[in-house]
Amino acid sequence: MKVDTETLAYIQNVVKTAQIVKIGNIIIEPDKVRAIDDDKQVVLFQDTDVPEMPFGSIGLNRIDVFMTRYEVAKTFDNFELEAVMPDKSGDEDDDKPKFTRALLMKGKGIKIDYRCANPATIQAPKMINDQVKYKVAMNPEAVLMMSKGQSAMTSEDVALISDKNGVSLEMTDINGDVFNYHFADKPLLMDKKADGKDTNFVHKYPLKIVLPLFKVCSDSPFFITSRGMIKLAVNGLDMYVLPKA
Image 1: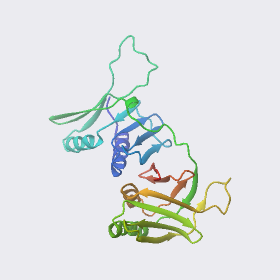
Image 2 (image 1 turned 60 degrees about the vertical axis):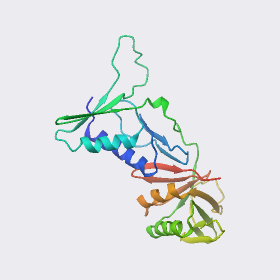
Image 3 (image 1 turned 30 degrees about the horizontal axis):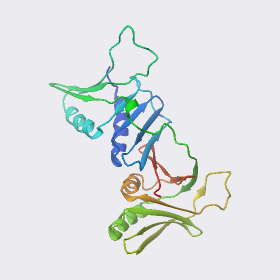
Image 4 (image 1 turned 90 degrees about the vertical axis):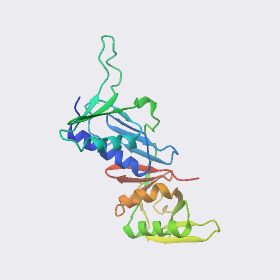
């Protein structure tokens, strides 16, 4: 089954977005995209505006391998991508979920196989059971200061702190020295059931995850959930960064 241009573009966008935070395995299925990194620090979960895949579901593991092979194959004339589906047999259960067995990249004089994973073998959350609570403004200067703070403090984590003065980012080195930068006014409370004055929070996140994501969308607001996850849209896909204990 030939993969059309729009479907291929969507798969590319999902893969490239996952690569930002080193997510290695992805499920694209009807109405959902699901993935989580090996350290369980960041989740890609999209359940709106997911185009229908003509081949059902697809499990992408070894996504770096996929992109490397794709970059080679697409340079050839008459390039196209085919989805290899399971062979139909007389006793096959039509109610079983369809998924792609492999992707075949073809061009003039070249063929490259990429074996897909069974989506059932990829671990990824099936839903996000958490509510958005705060909306926080972000800006390029804050992202730059986060990067400089990482270098100055050699810190692995960044704390996002909201108090009566607004929102700041904070890093601490091994000696207890503190780097603090105020970057936003008080967050907007999104949870209508919450106390209108309840805008204080402190959550810590891994810099290796949040900094690359903020660099991609440095001038877009992000959200904090009731459980302290950061939610932000990256290339049109929802990413969730889990807070550290």
